[in-house]
Image: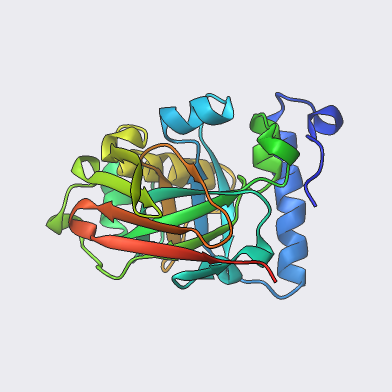
Amino acid sequence: MPCEPVTDLIGGTDIGVAYTVQSILTARRLAGGARIVGRKIGLTSAAVQRQVGVDRPDFGVLFDDMLCGPSVSMERLLQPKAEAEVAFVLAADIVDADPVAVAAAVGHAVAAIEVVDSRIAGWRIGITDTVADNASSGVFVLGDIPLRLEEFTPADVPMRMYHNGALASEGDGRACLGDPLNALTWLARTALELHAPLRRGDIVLSGALGPMVAVGDGDRIEAEIGPLGRVSATFTKKG
């Protein structure tokens, strides 16, 4: 059940407090048996920032049970929206946030659909709401064409996303902080500042390449991301 905004409880400007809430919820998930498999970067697209009404990126934690196949159950979602992204898989720990070192740590990239899902009723969120809510996390689906950075340029990838066969969102790599690698570098630097560096094997969802699209029971989302190919998700009906 969606709740009211938490800004009345934690304020609307103290990002540190919001990340403390996120860390408490993360600890509860880990105590319950969940496993961290990476991070997600949110609010990297100017279009998505306008949709949500915020002006800066944020990040959340990816848990193992958030990774879905092409069939996504609506039972676990509240008010989902889909985004098309570049996902990076790290081949080394990132201990230096220099952009060259960050790029060198990437093993490969794949196309991804992230399903963001606010627990705040009606998506009436500010920056502290979404940060506290694990960056409005839901689930994610990964494509199956892994490419090394030597094989493509993330900033140049075109993106087209279809909702039940109709074009619903489009953009390119530059919509994500100018380059998905810029978003990864921002996250690497922030993670180091928080003494929680990115590690080998982590999956990093780098952020939306265009506007997010609301989805419901029975919908199908398909995204094309340049040489990374296609990735799709079908949302199965509740009950």
